[in-house]
Length: 171
Image (cartoon, rainbow, N blue to C red; front, side, top):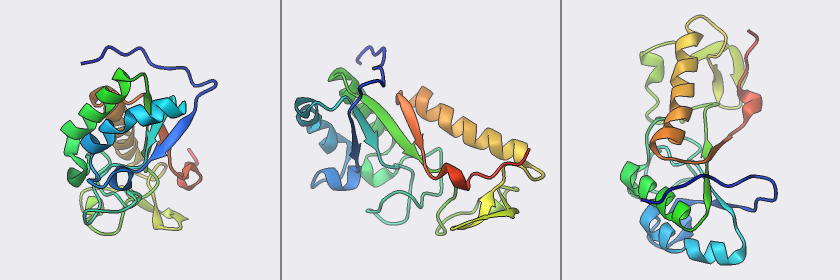
């Protein structure tokens, strides 16, 4: 709905926002209604904590298992699109926190479908995401495709990559 050319990062004021706790309802739509308050505070960008699906209704989002999907209890894909559009309409940029360094233990079925993880490297969460072992080209495409989808399909302005120190790549 709102044309958007973006906002520069120099001098930016980011507000880290957890959709599940920002409002009583814990949804994108409810959070969008409170965005004018952030503008009044001088915020220029909202950084959304991870919105990928995770077990249950409430959580921090760092144990997501589907890097291409949006948590349904928050409002799903359409809710995220409405939130980003509302933010842009108020002049706020939107940065999304993405977790590509591991996937949560509950519901993580990727190992059954391909070489998504490798024992070559270890992280605090177990085997590392496979960025340099056999089959890693497909895993790289999976993750870069996810990153590009957030930018293209949801019009977020940037990504904050979680725990990049755990993304081991010796190639």
